[in-house]
Amino acid sequence: MNKVRFGIISTGMIADFHAKAILSDERAELIAVCGHTNVEKTRTFAQKYDIEKVYTDYRELAADKDIDAVCVCSPSGLHGLHGIQCLRNGKHVLCEKPLDIKGETMTEMIKVAEKNNRKLGCVFPNRTRHGLRKAKEIIDSGQLGKMTIVECEYRGYRSPEYYTSSNWKGTKELDGGGCLMNQGIHAIDTMCWLAGDVKTVYGVIDTMLRDIEVEDTAMAILEFENGARGMLMGTTISNVPEEAPEGDRLRIEFERGTIVYEKGKTSLYKREIKEGPDGFLLGDEVHRIPLDDEDKAVISSTSDPANLDMESHFAIVSNFISAVIDDTDPYITGSSARKSVDLVLALYKSSKSGMKVTL
Image (cartoon, rainbow, N blue to C red; front, side, top):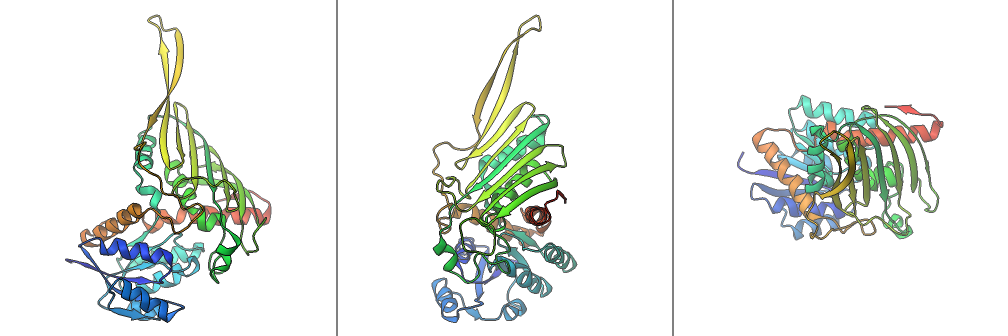
């Protein structure tokens, strides 16, 4: 395969980032687009990116034999529906976050991809960031010792107008959830990627200020498979949002150090113990080691969802193209991407039952 021929399903804001990423890679072509609500908007999108084929039915795009891969950019509750149809028709699928909003649908997506020998990838930009990737290497090396405490926060702001600007935002059917399933899923994915699998969750969700069907506030206590304990918080009604690319802040404590991700930058705090020649403790100091370029500007979408970091989308799409051409796994597989959604669904279950839930 010399070039991967792409189609895009849906023409919302995020589809623009996928289109630009595809067109920036000389190994790919963007040949088709499908809108699911507004025909004129779909045609305008096609003209903007010089796309030859325009569809209004996702099943027709999925059946197009000229298409090799599809970027699924539709509302979260349609990811599985659209992705499975494309996979069954022999297309590789790169899905926007979250993978889907239902556990059984994600399971079906993964099974269909495996059965048809197709690639299934997902978009989580934090996993491409230099400092966080460096932190992952340090954690996995074991040099920091036992993990003890994990703190994960998503702190963003979405106005009432944000939810009334679309007929699917803030709905259970198509958004699947609020500050956790939609906006905070980036933070949760990063936490699961760095800290490992969660064993149990006890949490509560609430809709405190917005007139929506899903949560605008959430809190939870976590227990990890590795024995660490954790705290998770999410909100879309903060007056002081976290100025990070995805509005997230993480702190992971270890026996011999701490990883901190805040304001879009990652740091390692490492404890150095000083001993005298006779073995007596002289003292200890904690040193901060930056894992990111301190001078690089941070792009944040916490208040404006359109203010996204293009570099990370380019990296994920480029990697997916390589996976298709070289027949390798995409950087973020479906099996890996589902873990954050499984945790959110367990938290919702805990909030409804008032009980701790085991994943």
